[in-house]
Image (tube, rainbow over all chains, first blue to last red; front, side, top):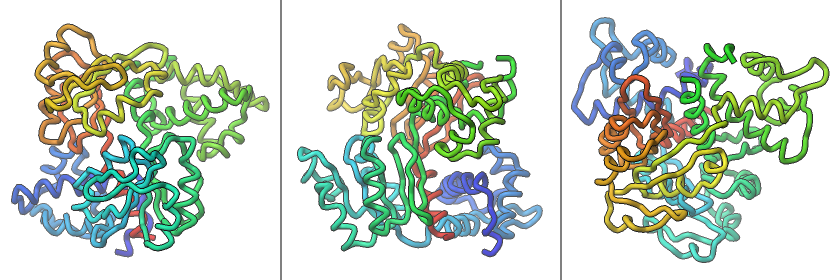
Length: 209
Length: 209
């Protein structure tokens, strides 16, 4: 896996999509697939696909295509899906509840450990057997439990404060749904889901057409 | 605006972020900003910023920085935010409700016209004064109303069917939250929000560190 070290973000961003398609192929009992066939399904060019897979090692045999099971395993490895990740969600509004209810995350190895909210009306309500807790208990919870990923689903104005509590208490990754860019200490990873940025890409495309 | 024609997707994807920061600067009554100052805030290099803005025209004056109001207006123009867009949401689960409740979209000019769901328990419930309607009425609604953007918040298995109904009835843009890639007729734009793809980017980064 030494090849992995200098992989561009563009390639990394394509990996989850490969993983999703290979999972689909596995479900449909497909054993082998050529880059050309995969290209038709996934929309990247065959040469792009071959180039991407070459970043990580030798997965295919010229003329025989890729072994789907092997390739799926390798990409799972690369994506770090061979272990479990513990998650807390902060903010139990619509987005927080949507993330909590998304059963596929659990299947991929992301285990929801707790949900927090500031709203007393939400505290005590159960989502998938997990009771929403008061946000004031977040810090103590993090001191007692090792958490890998903090999901921030609070409004913009509170997002940085929540982020600070998480990172001060050894949460190493932030999945941020608030429409702000967060400052994090070195060594902490952030991944943003900025819905309005995505919507504006669409208005751009419509406007230019 | 002739310069706009051959702009790379990478630049386009940065525009909403510029728009967001410039809006913030406007709110704080900042008149002018240099690419260097903007770089500190936004995280792109100053030369990247200058290069991006050059794609669209001459916004700055060497040594004087950019006029924030003018730049914000121009980027709003480029993003197509000078007109209104009508929206329907299909699927009123957590994600659908989150999108419906996101008041900032309305401010940007995206007007929610209707929400549809298959679940009889949800039909009739109001979200921001809009009653959730039965999905069986979607097609007729689209025949009677001109809709720009269809937001797909249904489970994967129904997403393509919903997409077909939308595009057959002249909806020109699809904002897709289902974890599948949709086939659309030529001339229809799609923008995906694939939450699990985003989460797997995070596990990749944690795993490689």
